[in-house]
Image (tube, rainbow, N blue to C red):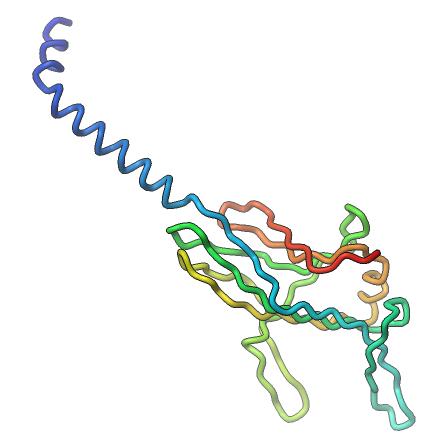
Length: 181
């Protein structure tokens, strides 16, 4: 036992330096990951639409103020996301969520507006799946979704609309988009 204590005394400076380096590395890594993801809503369009068929069979859409008269809902949002940490982070499973009080009524995946492409008779968009957030930078996203008649009937009863997603650790993040009275 005395031999071990003498050996430790002989290498006391080296052991102290190594422990100092290890503690510094661990603290540096921990401090780099500190920082929140912040959301800034730049464009917040929630349009309630009434689509009626005319004599020829074409659908004519018009915005309505009373959501109970709506047959469709168009959602369009431009959001700036700031990653305040010094490491890249990811956002996954982004959804528009419609709540009545604290009860989830419906969750819908948004589409990525930046992938929109047109053909002669229609247009296509890819689903918005995830986004990588570089450190100390703002990332701009544009999401859009057109909610059809069946789902609109459910959404008419909602009191709050959130954008919900999971962060890099799997924790759910909720950003309030609209609250109805």
